[in-house]
Image 1 (cartoon, rainbow, N blue to C red):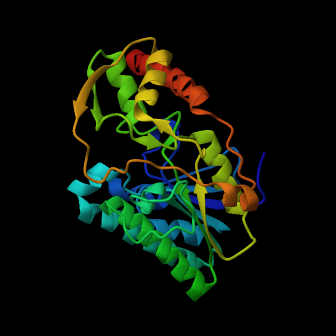
Image 2 (cartoon, helix red, strand yellow):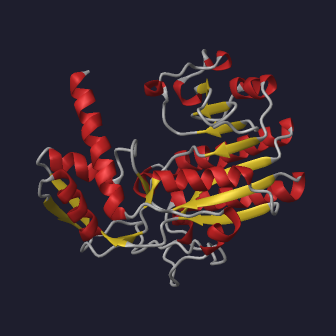
Length: 311
C-alpha cells in the first residue's frame, strides 16, 4: 500500500541495519547529523534524520517536496536526562524548533510531533486526559517534551501549520531501545544476571505495543479536522512492574534474579492513558494486550540475539 502523500520522518536511531543509504547531502556530516533518505513500503518518500542542524537537512528539503513532517526523534529517557539536562534541551527543544522552521520555510503544512506521557508528571487524576494540566514535569526529559508541544502550538498560531502532538505511553515491541525495561530485563534474565527493580514493584505503566503506535502515527499524518491537537496513544490499561517481570519470565522460560533498588528521582508511580479522544478523532484502536505483546517481543529478542551470535 502506498499513500498519495510524501512524509519526512525524523527518527532517533542509526538506520544502517535497515540496509539504507545516507543521502547525498549528508555524506560529509558528523554522526549526530546523519540524514538517511529511503523509500518506505507505505510512504512515497521518507526522510530519516538523527539530528536537525546543518545545511544537509535543508538541502534534502530543497530537493524534495514533503506534505508532512513526522518528528519522532530526540533524546529519550527520564533517568539519563537527569545526568545531561543541557544535552536534552539542545536536542529536544532546539531540534524541534529547527524542524518547525524547516516546515515554515518550505511550506510543509502538516507536522506530527512525538511527545510523551512523561509530560503529565505525578498526575493526581487517572486516567490521564489531554485536558489535564502539564505545568509540573518532574524530569528534564518531560520538560523538553512539554516545550515541544508549546512550540508546535506557537507555529500553528503564527504560520498556519497544522500540528498534531502524540503523547506516547511506554512503547515496546521489536527493536525497542536496549536501555528500556522490557528489553533490558529480557537480556539480563536470559544471561542469568540480576535485574534492577526500583521501588517495591507496585509502579504501574500503560505499555503500548509498537503496532498500535504506528496505527496512531499514520492516522495523525492524515488528520485534518483541526489545526492543533494533542492525543494520548496508549493501551488504556496498566500493568504492575511485578506482573511485567512475571510475563517476561514466562515468555523466556526462566526466572529473574531481583536486585531491589530504591525509587529513582524522576520516576512516576503510574501512567494511564485516556484514549477516548484518539479513538473519536483518529479512529485509534489498540489491539495488542500486554499478555500478547510480551511474547511477541521475546520472540523478536531471541531471534535478534541468535543473529548477533551468528554475525
